[in-house]
Image 1 (tube, one colour):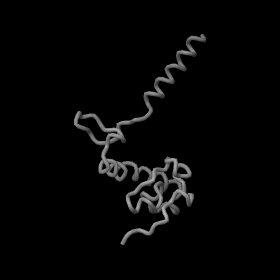
Image 2 (cartoon, helix red, strand yellow; image 1 turned 90 degrees about the horizontal axis):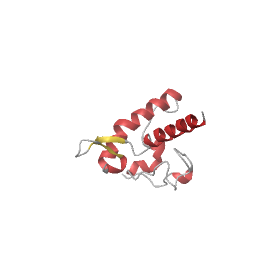
Image 3 (tube, one colour; image 1 turned 90 degrees about the vertical axis):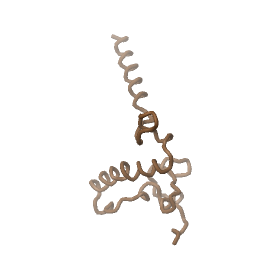
Length: 113
């Protein structure tokens, strides 16, 4: 019985590791396989965020609090730096945490133009 339990734990660990990053989420590469985030260039990453991530985030946040999140854009998670396409990732060491709205994680620059 103990061996069966250890086998189940081992199988769970293998599945969990197999399901982890890097996920192939981008467009097809030269070999026909979808690209991982690190394999995508800047334009491909922007397209993925615009076409996949942002619509999903909008659906989730607008279903949760439609009045507060009537308009969902890149600044939701990337802060004011999204205006310059100089994105600070929500999980970067410089931010205060995922999707943080802490002043230290937001740009103080004025948008150009």
